[in-house]
Each structure stands twice: as structure tokens, then as C-alpha cells.
Length: 223
Image (cartoon, rainbow, N blue to C red; front, side, top):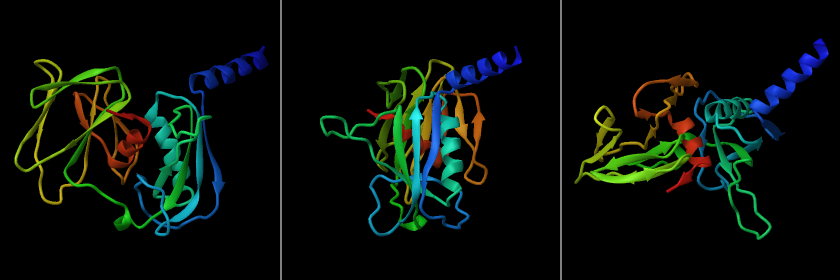
């Protein structure tokens, strides 16, 4: 009876989190104290050290748990950045498959990682939600994000929800780094780079930590 119960628990657990995350290659280990794990928009050529690759198989809605596991495996070989190369389908086109993807892990000097200024990302992990940007209504589908470029000539007014909803006003500034906001009913955000993890908060617009946010941008659809 105990054996049957054990098998049932194992099968049930696999069903609840039917996703496997493996460090399938560890070519090098780089010793460093970097806490961040940034996504690279382009595959590095000569200014980065390739360390290994992480393979994600299966799908889970728990993006925080997935990123946490990826983070641990990347840090085990000293990675501070990664590049996702979408697999090719039978027609030869590269498309992202949320059920199976590979992250190539690198060590790259922070100052060589391209950064944007005065760019804002609105990220929605949950069901479709309506966002108002300067009184213009935009529907943000589930697991998607919207990129906005700020200017010094105009204040960007972003609001979500009705009378008791949330609202932020943003404007371009010199040397202002990228900003990431979660727009959702369910409030999940990441801790600081010094202490990676997840926080549950209230409110409709939540600032996200860069490493976690860039992972969401990697696996979500841009609208």
C-alpha cells in the first residue's frame, strides 16, 4: 500500500510541474560574484566566454519557479548572461517553442552587455488586461509585453484598472536605465540582484527586477 501511495505521489507531482530543466552541457566554469543573469539579444561572437547550455523541456505557468531553477544552474558554472536560439521547424523557420527551448550560457563583462536608455516594458503574465497609455486603451494579451520609448518632451501616463487602479507617470531622463513593470491581477515580482527570489505584492503595476524581467521578455510575445 505504501509503495502504491509513493508511486501516486511521484506521478501526481510530475503532472503538477511537468517541466524539466537540465544543465545539459558544462564546458567551462567561470569564477565571479555577479548576481545578475541578463538576456542577450544577439549571439556573442568574440567578447564572451561560452560556458554551457540549459535545456528546458515541458511547459509551466510558474515563470518565477522556472527562472529560479535556470538561475541556479547558470550560476553553478559562473554564467551572467544567456542567449536563446529558437529551434527551426520543418519549414526551416526559427520560432520559439514554450514547451522546449535551450539557453546558451555565457560569461560577459557587464560593460559590454548592450543596454537601452529610457525604454519601458509593460509585462502581463496573466489573463488579457486593458492598459491606458496617455488615455489610449491597449489590450495586453496573456504572456505578452509592450515596449515603450520615453521622450523628454512628453510625460507618459500609464494606468490600469478602474477607480481604484494603479497609475504611473514616466519621462525620459539622461542615463535612465530600462524599466520593467508587471501589469496584472496576480502580483509576482523578483527580489533585488543581491538576493534573488520572488515577492508577492498588491497593486496593479509592479516594478520587476531586471534579470527576472528579461527572462519574461525572452519567453513572452511582443505586441
